Length: 180
Ligand code: PRP
Image 1 (cartoon, protein in one colour):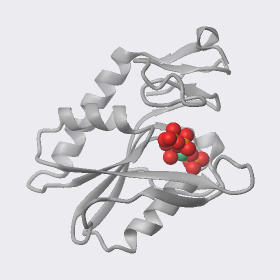
Image 2 (cartoon, helix red, strand yellow):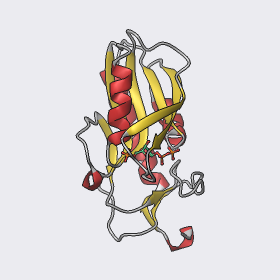
Image 3 (cartoon, protein in one colour):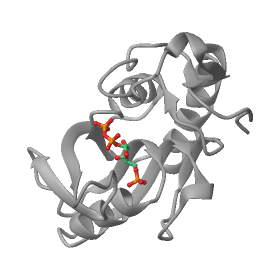
Image 4 (cartoon, rainbow, N blue to C red):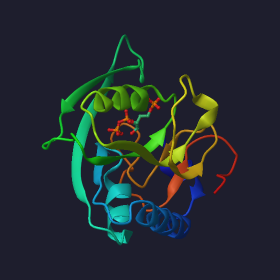
């Protein structure tokens, strides 16, 4: 796919404003606590970096690297942890940070895995929600934008490893706009 053929779905200015709102909400909700932000690599690295810098509460930050595996499917529902968290999550207020939720299978699997480690609380923060593709229900506590069923790249999201560095979010197919 050629990114020049893509349509800007969410601009960098819109992202910045929404991330600021989300950070304010999270800072209010976690006032007096020091949550552990867990970014799911690779896609979440840009979002987590911007979100963390807008928070007004102290936080810890850790990362997981995961890969879906299965016979040729992008999200098989089975998640292999390629790189685990460095620290313990037991008794921590854990906020899982994802760039996008599509089928929900990755997030569901991660939530089950992390819940078994007995954090004090466990919430989800996702920049992009693609509800039309959902295959399993997952609770999204903080959502940036809903996006249509298009292939989206930029702001951390890739196609074959490319475009993660783009400041806007682009749809490489489809005609619809995102809803804030
Ligand atoms: C994306 C995203 C989620 C997952 C969502 O990761 O970061 O982890 O897909 O899809 P799902 O809801 O259908 O399970 P991807 O596999 O593209 O890896 P990346 O983060 O390294 O880009």
